[in-house]
Amino acid sequence: MKILFHDKFLLHNVDSPAEGAYRIKEFTDIENTYVNGEPFVQLVHTNEYIYSVKQACYANEIVAEVQLTKDSYEDACIAAGLAVKASLKGDFAVIRPPGHHAGRETAAGFCLFNNIAIAAQKLVNEGKKVFILDIDGHHGNGTQDIFYDSKEVLFCSIHQEGVYPYSGFAIETGKGEGFGYTMNFPLEAGRGDKEFLDRVDKAIKRAIEFEPDVIGVSAGFDGYEKDRLLGLKYTKRGFYECAYRLSKSFKNKTIFAVLEGGYHDDIRPLVESFIEGIEIGGRPPKARFNEDMAIG
Ligand SMILES: [Zn+2]
Image 1 (cartoon, helix red, strand yellow):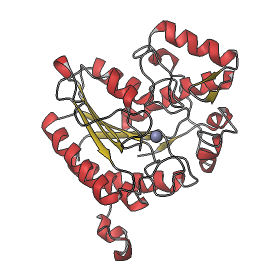
Image 2 (cartoon, helix red, strand yellow):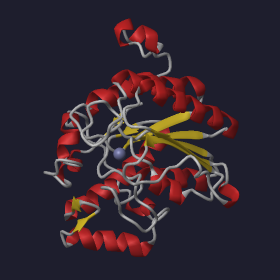
Image 3 (cartoon, protein in one colour):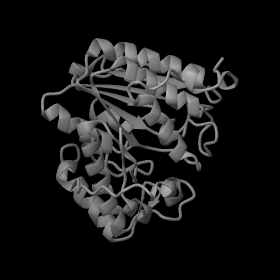
Image 4 (cartoon, protein in one colour):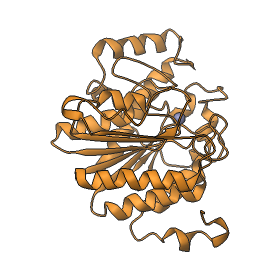
């Protein structure tokens, strides 16, 4: 699992104390990967919506709490492109803007285009089944809405309850052909690795029955104990162990990840911890982390 990154992502919504460029400034030593994802964006979003986003960026409007510029549009296209590229060989796309709150025709919660949904839809169009595990601390409502009536995509979200976007209840399970192909695991504020990993196990159990061809992770790191927006208490070890469990459960499958949220200065070490957990042959969490950090 390689990190895919482009330093142009630093040009979007630069000074925001929330979804600002500070989040990814530790990645600038990574070699740039450029893919213009614009041709893929329409796999999920309507042409009218894409046009409206482009116009808003060129007009420097504020949308979804984000100060847009023309760099924002280019970044949104590269972000979608790197998500698609990550899904081919199982890489980690460290991208901005994030995507999982964006619906087919709606920008929301710092998100313009739904990067993981675009990558997943491309795989579905190629006849593949995709398991999306959304571990961002917010509900992945955009991704859920996009695939709510699909049985080709199993969507599972683990998130803090009672916060933005105020959805993601356990009773939301899909509709029509997609009934039973959406799972939500809301957690109370203050919950940590133990509850997080218990829900990861439940999602994996369902996903094994589903028999996905590809696994995509909406990897947000705002469930982390140092996050400024949310009250969950996941640790570095929790992200490692989540990745380790996925890797162990889907040994011969492609597992890719795209960055979503995370509002603190530790995104780089958490991404690295996640990647370390994914790598086949990685050490079991007990060997990797000392007993002092053992979860209880
Ligand atoms: Zn989030």
